[in-house]
Image 1 (cartoon, rainbow, N blue to C red):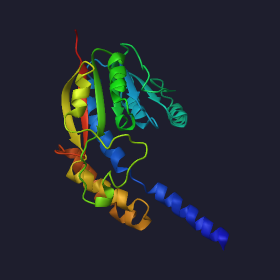
Image 2 (cartoon, rainbow, N blue to C red; image 1 turned 180 degrees about the vertical axis):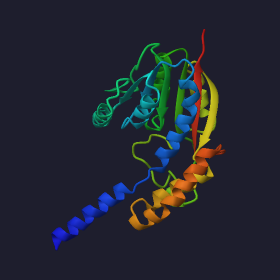
Image 3 (tube, rainbow, N blue to C red; image 1 turned 135 degrees about the vertical axis):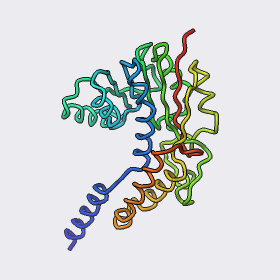
Length: 252
């Protein structure tokens, strides 16, 4: 009996994992690809994914742009190892991954583009990180950031960030204009702002978050959630719970 119960629990865990659909990851990736598309076809050669995690974004971009060089860095050795394995299986020669801490220097006038997705909310000394990114860029290079805003607005109260606090976050998000001010403070000029997690994206995230551990509900809701994410990605989310900012390093 005990073995049977444990087997059923294991089966349920595998089913939950197999049917998962990370709404935030989908929305962030859609916004990132939309922002990077025009830049990567306009003289960019060296790209840094600062906080590359499992490497999916770098690998996706490296496959799409074989003539460019991508470098992913992350503080988690296990994530870096997984990213290296994934790139190796695909025999990609234009992407590499390394363990590094973005609170330390990450380059000196080396990259044409640095992107950083949902990392700054984890770091207390964000000005130091932004300064490291600016220093790593060549003149004319671009920094693309995505991060939560504050205050957050959700349909389901239990999905408010204040109600489901991530212990790895040091801030809920940035107040309107705060991130742009900090970016300007390290010598970069903000050129573009795009809100993400608007009404459709937020509803999708709330439904996913509230039912992520409920297998039947998650399976039944998935088409609805995916449709909401598609609507989110097909238009401008204004206002939104998160923001993507593109800034350029101008000449002296």
